[in-house]
Image 1 (cartoon, helix red, strand yellow):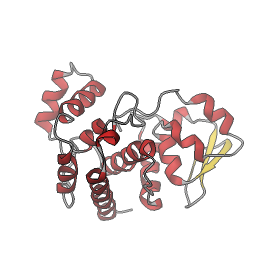
Image 2 (cartoon, one colour):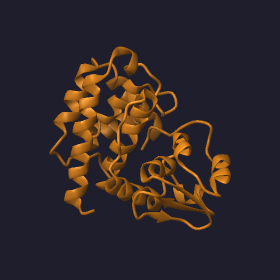
Image 3 (cartoon, one colour):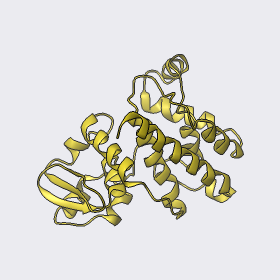
Image 4 (cartoon, helix red, strand yellow):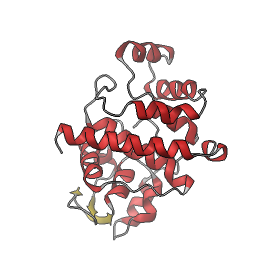
Length: 217
């Protein structure tokens, strides 16, 4: 995918997720997400901070004493104090903008919106199909980027094969499934296991932490 296609996919995902936000009830906002310790509300709040600029980001890091994960947690918790009706408005307002947090590529906002969309939708049992081509581009980025996921190291000795598009990664015992599940797997979500199969599945299950994914995608 070229840069224009990446941002078109981000815009589409943001708009559709904003529509989902507008439809959630109070109980759904309070539902635990796939991110350990985060409710749907905190994940939604985190997504509305995708345009965090350099100076506010530096201030937030200093407040968190240099701990990036703590900064991401703390900023989301503060943002989650907003009325829930504002999250759809804020996310929809980002559509058409290519602003992003400092020191990241264009693919990180794509990873963020695709994965966190599932962090919200799966526990709510809301159907949210993930488009295969953007998911494959995001999966390739996660596989090659190292921190914070270190997917290549953690999944060494396994061959990952998508069943709904032309995407593979790694070598070894095969694990196969839809590309959406592959992206969730690469970002540490155990929820992906329900959609995967193959001779490497047992080995894979022993490698994943009991906790689901880190919110810091």
